[in-house]
Amino acid sequence: MNKGELVTHIAELHKCTKIEAEKVIDMFTSSVIDAIGKGNEISLIGFGQFTTGKVAARMGLNPKTKEPLEIPAYNQVKFKVGQKLKDACNPK
Image 1 (cartoon, rainbow, N blue to C red):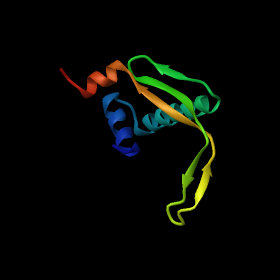
Image 2 (image 1 turned 90 degrees about the horizontal axis):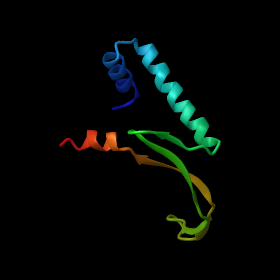
Image 3 (image 1 turned 45 degrees about the vertical axis):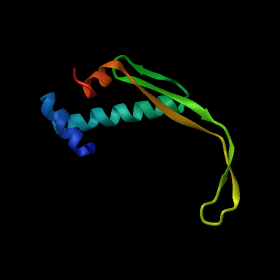
Image 4 (image 1 turned 90 degrees about the vertical axis):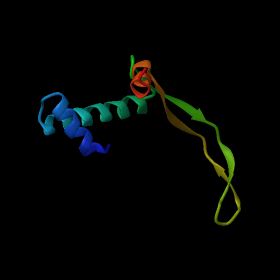
């Protein structure tokens, strides 16, 4: 499902306009990006938890030239699935 399909799904499910549904999606995604960018964790009970983790610098290999290169350290976003979301994917 892409963003347009999600907008339509939300609009039909919650009896709102597509403009309102898209606005909600945009507010959610921009808020998550802003909070994670500031180093905060986001926990939505039943849905999941957004966190960040540090990935250490390491040596890699350029696949084209086969020369070694250093891959710098960076922060990676992680998502741990909540129980309600797990249950929705695995009906009993």
